[in-house]
Length: 275
Image (cartoon, rainbow, N blue to C red; front, side, top):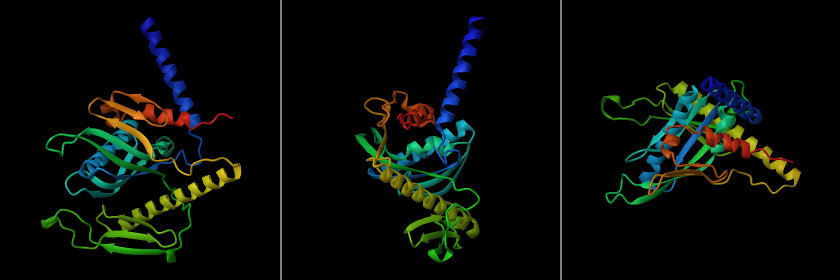
């Protein structure tokens, strides 16, 4: 009897928590899917390996939620890891949950690439953009685009790509450059590159609106999320700590395995300002 009551109370608590989080996801684009771009920062090979670890973390988070995930563009590191990668996570409120991940993520650990296993600090930048809808939300003039094709990089030998199927698109007015080479079709790579370009232009427009709103209000609000987002320490102790909300856990391996919900929800609650 007592066990059944405990289960019922736990289910009720989860339902209330879910309803509370849903109420916080009321931004204009929160209900959309997300484009997540990861870039290796300071730290050389360790930073590129760290970027790949973050890629796995977000893919595992998406998998836990039953969201679809697709990698659009990936540039591998020279020795290990990845230099930069762009992926799409498609599911209800994916952007609303992940938008707070923007910023610099720092890893402290014993380097597997150092013969002496010295402690190294690595950095990676996370960008999160709302997925553009099927209908174009930002106008793109074809005359403003410079489209270049090139052969996709990949393994040599029989698998080398002999045709120019990779695409690089430069948006001349903004200077934004996007590329895609993961698909074997030139048309498909062009389509995905345009998809990413639309998302980046939309993000710029959202930032412009936020800056204008802050100016009109007269508030001194930073124009971006800042640089420091979260710190992950694997040596000499284990700790994952959010540097803005203060939330932390010693189970950093679970976080790196995609258990991000507590961090994401704390960020959502912290983003609500009480008048």
